[in-house]
Image 1: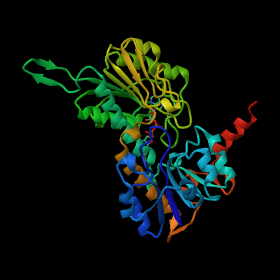
Image 2 (image 1 turned 90 degrees about the vertical axis):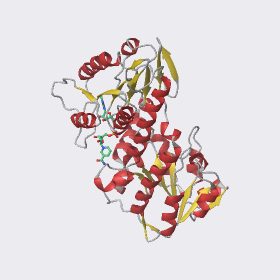
Image 3 (image 1 turned 45 degrees about the vertical axis):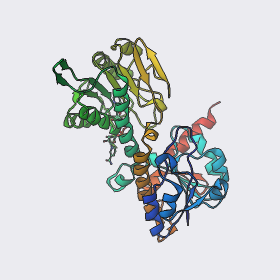
Length: 382
Ligand code: NAD
């Protein structure tokens, strides 16, 4: 059975789906791993490293696609690649099924079995496969470094002969995996950190990392679903949060926004007015730009300046730390592949409580109900 790793072609992408240490494990489990020339270079891994791990290297991308049983990818393959891939093959990666469901239609036509790592359930059994958490960890960390490098001051409290330098103030909106990592990183650099989230459990986690938690009285409304994810709130509830955020953003040197509601537009938390009231020289890093942004002024992958405040909305921060993001992702994928490959053979068990929920297309059908409903809705729209 052939597992294939291609060079990721998306602009700015430096990650690779499988690192050599994962390739070694797969080869030991009687799987042939084929890697496109230069696939690992962005993550500082050469063709030689892959060969030493037991992979076969090829520069024939079309040939590799035609011989693929499982394509291990970071990003969703292009339409051209999806058309070239062997009919009936398996594709695993960040396929963005809830953001761009129609982009998976070519996979359906090619009878591909597609797995979106975004939909791997966050259950204990699948913890080692949790690619969303892996990437969010890298992104939260890097966001703080970006902010620290951009503000015109230092992060830690310093007592010097020339006087005391007060610590920087960091406000984190959305204390999920990325937000919590941002809090931890900002604290390590010595900043004073405040954070806001609508989930009650987030409050304890913020406190345990040494941050202060901003509490809003939302009138006892439901803020999370059974799975522990935040749900979309009413405008009235959102406004209560926005007022408190604006008040605290005024004093912040860096505001990092990482609030998301799965499958929905990101909640708008930092309004234009709130940015207008922020200090000159302060920086906003909006980590939710791919789903619409948490800051009213952010523009995906652009740098905006407004009244002395810089707003960054990077789309792929994980790719800026390619070695570790590839390493974590590669281990996530290898753990997931362990569910699909038995004795060197592909065995897809759709009843498995990790395999089934993460599958989008299988045997010519859209098997994910949410994606199917979104596609039906888009087709029936005039
Ligand atoms: P996410 O990226 O979907 O959202 C990020 C954060 O935004 C969340 O904390 C969410 O509560 C917050 N948010 C949403 N709407 C908001 C609003 N209007 N105002 C303020 N904040 C808002 O979340 P994630 O980082 O992927 O993780 C979310 C949940 O999943 C958490 O409960 C996390 O602990 C849990 N989780 C569990 C596991 C596991 O058990 N294996 C692994 C990872 C994450």
